[in-house]
Image (cartoon, rainbow, N blue to C red; front, side):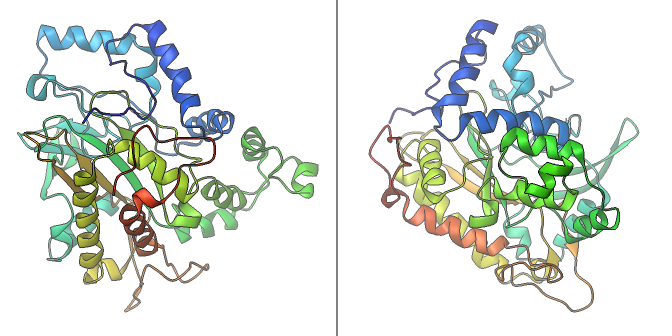
Length: 392
């Protein structure tokens, strides 16, 4: 079946600057979800370090052909600005796979290539501790990338991880950030301890929605950081559905970053139908794995004893080979995962109120499973139409 681009954009990464500029314009308009708001939010994200800035990252082992392609890509204005889409694919392995691998939601320079089938991710203490704990949890081991310990390279400490895309030939990937909030309770507490009215955050807020500030906030032309943090979550489906689409990279097209204001079930379903190219076999394989992850998490002591913030499920599928679809899902990214005190445990479904540390991870996973189960029954948003009959 012919792939349907998310952006109605068939251009590849070798287009010249004029074509790339046209592609950017198409990207902003073709989803149909509040394009002006997304433009303003994109500016806001760059300033606020929301860990979503795309960067290209290259292997140290480059032949002349690779270097030429690198120069061509760097000349493309759009490549430097697009948002990172896959945590676990941090470099362009032209010498190995003949297609660009991009990374999502990581800091520039945080990844390096390693041995075949593995990558290096810059070590952070909180994630390193979690990865070691996961080694002792047989359930978590079934749904997370394999962890091979700490590695030092050029004076920098890294964790060595399984490259989740290594088994795919030409993968399409979707990063979905889980939970009803993406900030830790301790971050909110610290912000309140130094509570000040922030004019810069007010300005960022009104850039996106001039009607959002209260009358008092308009008077002072400032908002507090906690107020800003909680408002930011409501822009997407995070607060309502317990997950949000963070980024998508179709196999043969440019990465797409414009999902921060995709809020409703209809909007999410519309985007995901396009992402899987309307293939029901792909939908069923992803659904089966999502259910497996949910069942596994419900048994995990590690999961019950941690506040899991900023973690994602990574959906990967390949172009069908000889009529057989290949797809998989993993739980990734533990940089904000925090252990609970004492014998406290979370069910990850109870609504969050400050102090209970509930993160809504399973609430979001329940909604995501339900969405994949009913993908064809969820209508397209008003004013938009599916390119093909819906799957499932």
